[in-house]
Length: 290
Image (cartoon, rainbow, N blue to C red):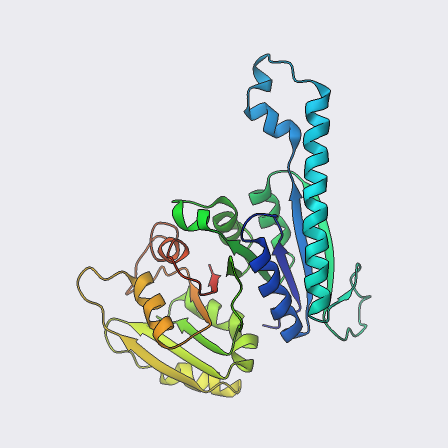
């Protein structure tokens, strides 16, 4: 899979800066196009949830003030995104190229809409090869994070979770969780452009020793020389923590994994391994594919 288009959700929250930095850096590495997508707060929807729909009159000034604040916040995020994009050598390109024409160099654009962010981000992500989302402290502490889970479930696209502070490197040393499941195969295919540029690639398996001869042969055809790390599983060991621990020991700057649903790690997507990894206290970027 060639990654030509990247979507970064630029919410303006605490994790936005890290997401934008990581997304722009990756876009530059791949020579791709990035769109920063900002969802404006809908004043009507917000005030309705606060009781405006139960007979309470809301002055027009309240709607106007909320709209003005939302526009001002969006302007700040857009300005910060443009500074980061230009720092990484990206050029402004607001429209898609005409069919059959060649596009050279990495580029960027901005888009904003009004509504419910989890739904809109998931819908917009369908038309991009990769979506980058910020992984804030709230995402770590809460049992469910709407935008992350909605995008994983309904966009059909791989999701790169960026920490609040972007690491200094991305994709030099890549670890990926492998168990032969459909999800791990899709994750591997998605990550191939990144693996091809990496200096070190390690396949991590957990539990019983696995034969990954066919996997390494497949990667070799793509110019990727992969190493193998098998991690034994003790009683009570969590798969997510095991993968993260091994990735950290390997010095990886990116962990790639699928939403495991096949043996030997039979888990519900958001009740098991994926939720465990999303909720872990780690600064490691995570590339997840469902």
